[in-house]
Image (cartoon, rainbow, N blue to C red; front, top):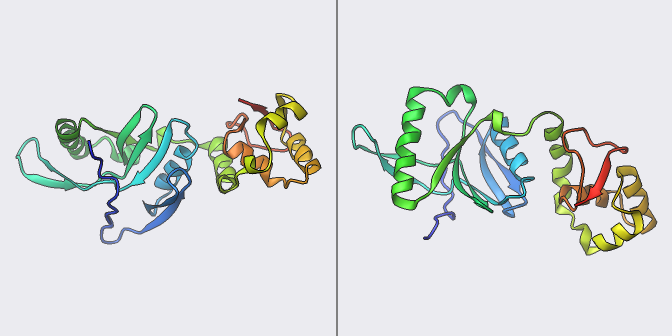
Length: 211
C-alpha cells in the first residue's frame, strides 16, 4: 500500500502562525504550528525508540461526513512510522479534545481511514507528552544528536575501560583522556548509546550505564 508521506501541505489558517522544527529521525525540517504543544511533541517523540520517522502534514484527505455524506477535507498533523507504529496523529490541547464537534470529526476521519487504508488516527494531548525534568533533559540533549560519537570511539572500548556504569563527570573525564570533547558524553546519552534516568535533571553526578 502506497503511503502519501511526501506532500507538504500548508494548514495555515488566517491569524495562525507556523514555523519549522528539525527532526533528526527524519533528517529534515517539519512544519509545526507556532505552539509549545507541537514543539514538545516533536521533542518527546525524537527520543522514543519505537518511532523511526516523523512526518508533518503527511496527506490531505477527503472524507464523507457520517451524518450528511458531505465530502470534507482534513490534514493530520503528523504521521509516525516505526516498530508497531504506523499512525496518523492529531495534536490537540486536552480541553479542546473533548467537544462534540471534535469527537465527530475524529469519528468521521477514523472511519474513512480504516475503510480506505486500514490506518488509524490517534489524538495526542499535553497529557501524553513528556514534561518536567524529562522534557528539560530532552531540550538539553536534542542538539547533541547531530554528533555521531561512535565515529571516534566504540561502545566496546568504553565498556572495557569504564565498566557498565559511571557518572556523567566520569564519562567526560574518560573521553578527555582520549582527547575527545565533553560534547561526546552528551551525544552518547542523546543517542541512547548510554542510558540514564531521564526523569531527573542530568548533572555531573547523574549515573549513566550501558544498555
